[in-house]
Image 1 (tube, rainbow, N blue to C red):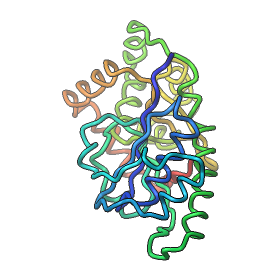
Image 2: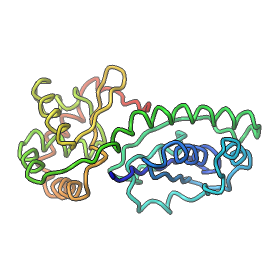
Image 3: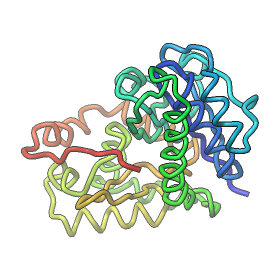
Length: 256
């Protein structure tokens, strides 16, 4: 059975939004995801948040407020922030994680059950979409043949793609064509090969298709990429310079 992907929800107080998201996702897809939550400035769980969790048929004793520092040394596949403040403060968590920014209104200032209940409904809808899109990464065991992996990384362009995406978290095709100074068909062929080997995963958002490291990549491949990047800064510099100076670079939107 393939390992479960690890999801961390983050908001400021870890008293309502992130706790409710944690409880919901664990209830909806706990067989596919290991789930936790934390706060940049943790407080106590709000009674109305716990009440809504209980009303959803979920045991509220399964969630507890905790600080972001208490989970900072753990490996996460997804870090999902639930407010702008948390999004700006948790960049040091999960170096290789896919970062997703959701911005839900904080129901705590209202102190009204209706506001918490509405948040619960909206979180369930968003999480249903998240599970539908990302559960495919856990549905099949992926085998990584070392000879195939090193053969793929033996091409300069494919190696550059992997190192850039590792550093930038995700990039779209147009960004990669600019960074590599190569045609789109050529870049797309390289991306297809990396995707077939489960080294990259992709996701369409509007007119753009974004590529990121595949969530099933084993630690030994991540270690190879990290060590290669650390020891070969000069190799990466021309690609990163072209990327940084790209005109009309698309604005990334994390919407799933």
